[in-house]
Amino acid sequence: MNRRKFLKQSAFTTAGTMLIPHFLKAYEAQMMGKGLAASNGKILVIVQLSGGNDGLNTVVPYRNDIYYRERPTIAIRPEKVLTLNDEIGLHPAMTPLKALYDEGLVTVINNVGYPNPDRSHFRSMDIWQTASDSDAYLRTGWVGRYLDAACAGKAQQPFRTIEVDDTLSLAMKGSNLNGLAMLDPKKLYNQTRSNLVTNLSKEHLTNEPEIVSYLYKTLAETVSLAEYVFNKAKVPGTNTTYPNVELGNRLKTVSQLIQAGVDTSVYYVSISGFDTHINQPGQQERLLGQYAEAVGAFMTDLKVAGRQNDVMLMTFSEFGRRVKQNASNGTDHGTANNVFLIGGGLPSRRVLNEAPNLSKLTDGDLTYSVDFRQIYATLLHDYLGADDVAILGRKFDGVKIV
Image (cartoon, rainbow, N blue to C red; front, side, top):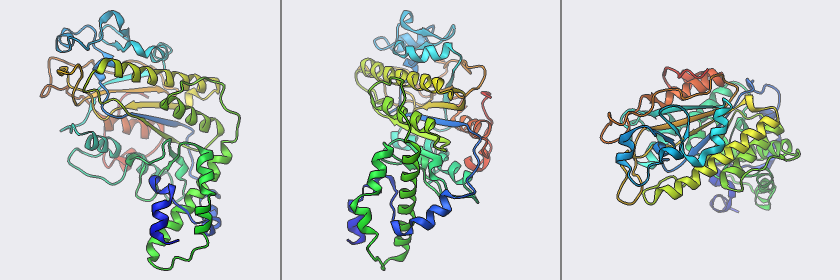
């Protein structure tokens, strides 16, 4: 088997993770031996709502006449809103999230964005995932740089950041280490024991030594990680009932890994479908209902396991939508949006800041007042105990959540 055939056939190439077994023992000694980087025991779970979720119909300004004037057919009627305070409330499909709010577990941050916003899905997502300025292009993600920092000078631990997916997001890629992408620990373990990997160990690839060295390293990494996570995850499953939808299944996997004691500090999960240009009400209601039910089950599961105070869940989307609805009963790409922080054992769960000012728009869009990197800085420094300035490249004033 030649290198090109291997790259074409390998299931690991999609996650950027591949391995060669006869290098495995030496690599395991380095990665899994003594000297593991210390963790403060806190866990961050990031949920990405891909497509640009409409924040105004998620956290609804139900007392604002401009909102109803600009959205005559898609606005959420005041009597249906799950009120949080005298100005805003949640979409009626989000009852499980409202219950968490009433328990003191949810903080809502309004008007989150960044300077000179980009309305392209791909570019804005890159900005959020790399924590870059809108005119800068980075090749590493903010979680990947956290992983680099956590393992600097210590044993390498890509399992410190796990994405529950079959591909790895830019957010999870560092300069020296990438996080681990997997949908199922057993499936990944079985893949690393496949005939493809076994046969590859017998090959002698002498040409292109730099590429071969990289393949050896990354393949050994994946085999070790798959075995570590699989062995850790051999515990009884949860008794909590999760909704049988994509997010429910992925958060169930996250909960199982947390309860199994996998030494992971950051989990990353994404769901799609939020690009609601046409007939928004039904589609968003379904997605927000799935989101709220899945998060409700996840937090209940953690509470039963006694881990609710150790785990914070952050939800974001790459941008919000325009204030004015379009002609197709939907909304187009906008700018600022809301962010949810849930759990984590932090005090004073609440609506953190002012509601969107619909009388002071920027080109028809919401004006941001919180840079998303301020939230990252707070989570990195105050919650995970990391060097936020080194990871983000400069100092951002934190938000007062801790």
